Length: 435
Picture 1: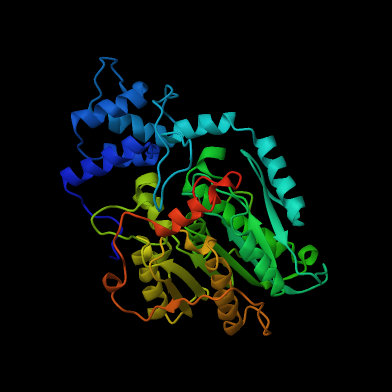
Picture 2: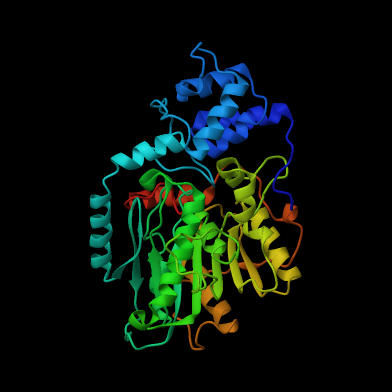
């Protein structure tokens, strides 16, 4: 399970490529991954329909050599602009893309160019004002500014030295709702914590790949630490948290060698003092296929961005939450085992029968927050004191048993079904329920 890359059989590679092409998930990095392997004429035909410029000799047939050359150049920015690719339906699943997602990195950039960023930012500001959050711009990027929204404790003052937490929403690195973790943030605010929710660049709005998502998360932690005086927080007590892809980028703030933005002040550490990870995409979950991160970015970058590969004794105290019907659970168990082997304080809690996204279903949104607050009190990050009451609900602590004995293998996602039934997708800019 520790291996990220496995030399797949040609038949299995072809199946993965066909699924990704059909769902519209292949980025330039993913197409390069595909082009490095022999694929069927039918799959080359699909590539040609999406990327006619790859046909170098314009004979109407795409060869493997043409595909390899084109997609290498496309990833490095040397390829000519691709023609408009055939539309593809939005995908779903634990690591799926957002609604209306374009089928390639080029398509995503075109979609991002037509995205109304001004309206989106105004929508965020309106929601923040409605909820009484404090809004700050934490980063300027070529694609636009990035904001962070804080739920403050009732008796907050800028002169305070409080602990802080910043949440990163999920959405398959493709979309998502900045306010997905509003209940959790407000719970932590009641615990006396300065609780932030950070926007970051994603594929459908900004035309970027997951490495840029990670850069932004690292920038957000640095910005919070650098602005402790105006935020009333202690820069030595900062927690990073999030769910699914958001849990992944939160965990990547703790990787010393992960990519940083050119504009970051690297003298300010982005490594948090604690991690709250909800069903995070942090490690390989199946030895029979490469991780989605590897398909999207290539093996070299993927190796830098799989948190389970980088756990050492200096890794911050970590609490994780998974449903037993979540197929990302094996990756979480891998990180848990690495942390425990390294002497890191790490706890993993399980919700029986729940799938991906369960922490945004009552009572689990508040129950998981209560468990996390208790954990960080014991870790010395939060101040000791009574915790706010939450609805009843208990999670089971993972004790190292084989993941095969607890993982429920099913194509259904009971958590997502419940979220859909309760209208969770009515939240603005949510590409999937709590990704």
